[in-house]
Length: 308
Image (cartoon, rainbow, N blue to C red; front, side):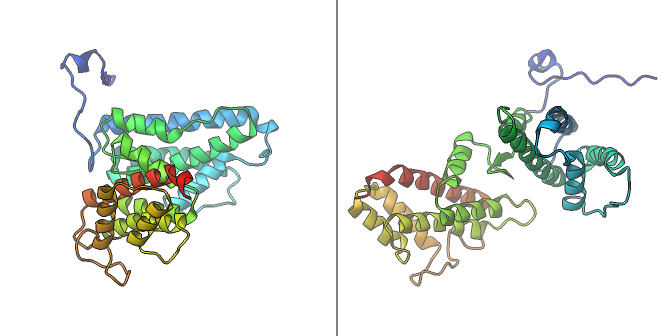
């Protein structure tokens, strides 16, 4: 007997009329079946399109001996599934790629949400790399695959977004934009602190909110020290010197960041517990710090030209 088709479209007739409603509750630790299928189909479709583009331009690229299917198979099997690879198999690419698609079906349909997102984070990074190779070699407009997935996450009420190529439990677009802009700053030390804070915050298995807070405030401290050209200044000293140099920070804002700095350090300048940034720190507090410090970083960089 032929299986009955499951006809359901988000914002479609049945959904709008309330006849067959789609999920509208934010999905965090569980992903419904329909969402899993849509993620799988979208991902398979993206890779099918990139393979076709590579086939089209293969002879014109400098990668004529590079099989991206093989590269993808090796990357996922060794980097995500931790499986041994038999390089002596002369049918390596075709056979293993078919197996990989079956493994994808298994993960997206049956595995824990954290495993789905872990796999997705890896393969989207691979897609981004492959498309970057194409766009820099040919006159192809580069696609922001992370924005496309964020749109799908939004449509499916998935409680996560890609921020700086990592999946994070942040869904506010303004917050995401602020963090991404701050991470693009020109200073390696500041960028490293923000990226570390984001990584600690986004770890779905062993998140470290305490040290995420400390990395966030350290990013602000590092930037202030760079701007005043004094690597040994405390945050409060650097903020005062910024004012003397022509960057006027609103007193309430400067005082707030000085207090936040105090929460995560003692007078010896070494990070300790004892409030915001200790072992009791929550996700919401760590996220607040990352977003606030990112916004403040962007604010200071926008005022950089006013330094005397």
